[in-house]
Length: 223
Ligand SMILES: N[C@@H](CCC(=O)N[C@@H](CS)C(=O)NCC(=O)O)C(=O)O
Image (cartoon, rainbow, N blue to C red; front, side):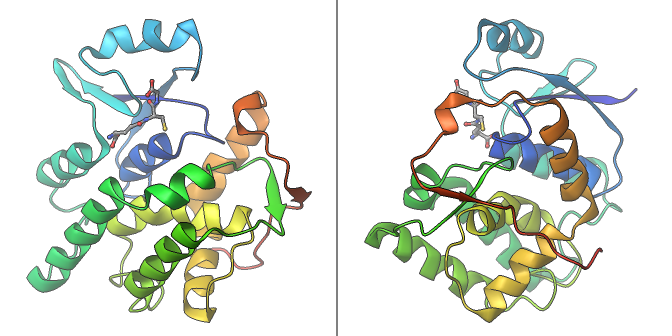
């Protein structure tokens, strides 16, 4: 039996990206079904995932999981060798804390800079509360040497859309954080997600902004 994951549009649905990375980046097979955001089709697709009302929603037989943090824990329990969390207890505790802080926080950055993997912007004015979020993110990422805890973990999957917000809005962060953003830009799972999203997603007007558009940053390295 294979998991099915309901996702929104790949270019715009940051939580869907996290959910999918929890499978793809850890080698767990998954089929996706599209639940188009802001459409009647959204509720129709999610009816199969009751009581879910947001994406991502995952299903395996009678089991339904409708929250990305719950999905991370459930997959980590079911696939103990997949490496969702660092093996070292202190690092695992820190990784869990980071994923949880991301799950419940950074609302200023998240609401001001929506994830948009199709269109990038430059010269975006940065309000104080967004800078405060960025400062906190930089502090958390400061230990990254490659990925946050050595091997790719749930903490990295949870921060992937944050890295894409920084890249796609050309937000200033220092050299360490910039290197971490580029690590995500080079990540094969993320690149594949982006490619498919750009090929199949419609342009959603809700994500149009008045800021100056620019080319999406690319990276020459691949993971
Ligand atoms: N706490 C949820 C958040 C999921 C979420 O807000 N997903 C958005 C799409 S990125 C959604 O489904 N929005 C549709 C809605 O709220 O009606 C999780 O961690 O999975």
